[in-house]
Length: 191
Image (cartoon, rainbow, N blue to C red; front, side, top):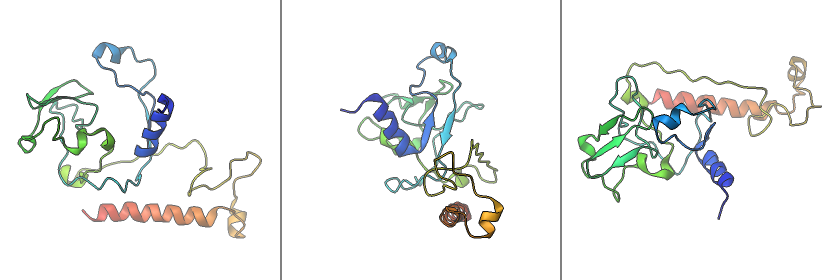
């Protein structure tokens, strides 16, 4: 049996997402009592070989100012064929393509193991710009994109180190970031 902390860590490792909370408020009253602001650290382009992109459009909340996507945290009434948005609590009907939905026949977006799903967003929102923001608190010190080690006594590389080919992690980090850029660019050129 795993501990709650191990369970949270497994989910973060699987999805590449870390939230400032671990439970979604179940009512508007609970939502108003949140003390910590809702925030998220997201790993862009997290590879999930066990989860290929879903080849259909996401099911969106019908409230005009919400448009949240159906997900495993939504409450679902399989008999009435409706789902409740977990952001605005709007009750939404399932589209006709979900006519066969039941407790034993669920789409991927309702299964807990598929809490992260890749859709063909360009097809969903054509000619709509998107923006990815990255907020960094320092240089990467772990993983394939690291540019400096963990020890604080190790100085970050300088231009002179790079010019003299004396930057310890430069080649590996450059290769990693070029691969990420090519992967990101190639995914968008498909559309």
